[in-house]
Length: 159
Image (cartoon, rainbow, N blue to C red; front, side, top):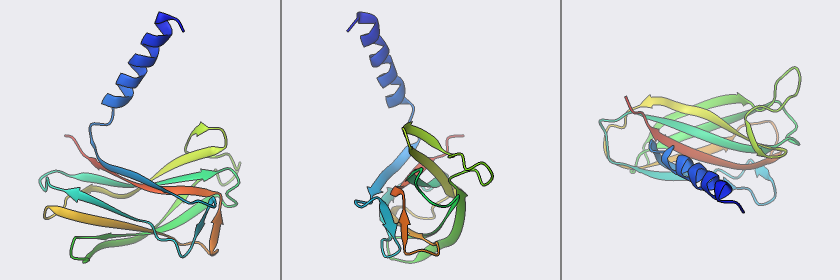
């Protein structure tokens, strides 16, 4: 490997490492059998200490092109550390263009695509502590083939 190639790799790693300063939390839960069962309701627990800041709470979806529909519907639940439900909402997101069928989102691995769905934008937590977001698929099928993983990302908004 040439010296130039090594420097390019090092520079790329540095840019990638520095580009996520606003991330407070991010985690994915993989579905072992490459589908999301209606009985699977992944939960993500994260800690918030800065109640003066505002946050974006984002659901992540990773799917294959074999996913049979253009859209996905997800219900999310945000609970505080006592279990009190703070928010609940049903959201839909296009994974494929409705007319052309072209996959949307970002792809890094051939036929696998990542999507971000904003659950709450510019949200301010009222007290410090642990919070939980639960995601539930809300389609008309018990098994969503082609959904590989779901995740959660919490980002601090920097003015």
